[in-house]
Length: 439
Image 1 (tube, rainbow, N blue to C red):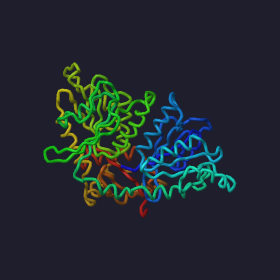
Image 2: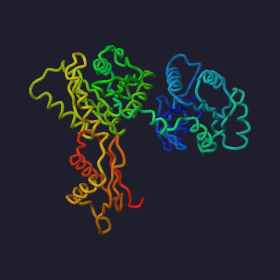
Image 3: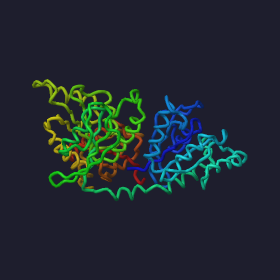
Image 4: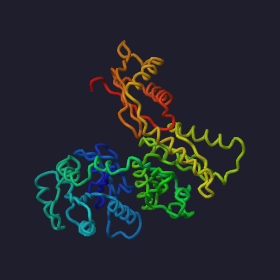
């Protein structure tokens, strides 16, 4: 998984402004009002060839014992625990505070890189005044201005230098191991399904939603094939995320999806496909993962000859973007059809890692394009010159064309569907990239 960098500090020191600058887009809400950021915000960032997950946190108030500020403090503590590196941001205009001393004392007990940055340093005078922050006992201080970028990229250079390279991390993964993430709303039976698959009580099962707080990894072998099964915390609607630990759990679940090959999207048969199920499925789709819908608690549903068809139609209608994903109907409680999940996982994974030869791909793609030619650009056809597969997980195909900007999304969808049908990618996502010839 990508390393995590957390930005912490007192309320209103400019954490969200720094977050937006580092992830190069306005993602966090920035308002000059104490405690604006309450939920943790996160985004992908990259610097000096290192990719990482950047986490913005709510303001840390060591003295708060109750109310929203206490929840924000707990949220920040969890972010520190999860992070591979921490940026402690302080306010150069407000000066050194008692809270800064308390936070620094907490960070001295953390065995990971901590970068002490003083924000709102916009000129030589403020930089001279920032010297007082050395009273906290750090060896290096970074005077910065998140607003105008002063000193920010020097800070980033040092942060990136302490992070592991993504290439080195990928080499540690077992290429023969299928990584399966089990995701869904709270209380849909994720832990029960994991225990049923493993044949033992690996995860705590409790009728209270939210029992699983963290992602739990379990390697196992089935019929000679190695798997890594990840049980994740339930992902609630954002409006219902009140406990700090649940906010932390959502980030862990998203990280588990990113680090998986196949995602099992659990649906409660009694509730059917809900809007939140669709959003969770969307997370897996956006990450380009192979997916299997698992309708759990099937034993508790009254059925007739049309029941399965109704469920299938409902899922296909609400999650059209995953129309290719297999659907399994199981009961983790009784074990009903649980083994069929592995048949679906194997089918998806085989396609997810399949490669097509360049010669065969070009020849058949030209037939596909000839059946339905692309639109014309400036009085001539938007010619496709060359096509090739460049990767797997998901299968990724590059098309070199006259003008990539003029490939309409409907034509891209036509090509994707034709590729699925022609080359047998019927149960996994495919990714198409269009480039200008010679680019």
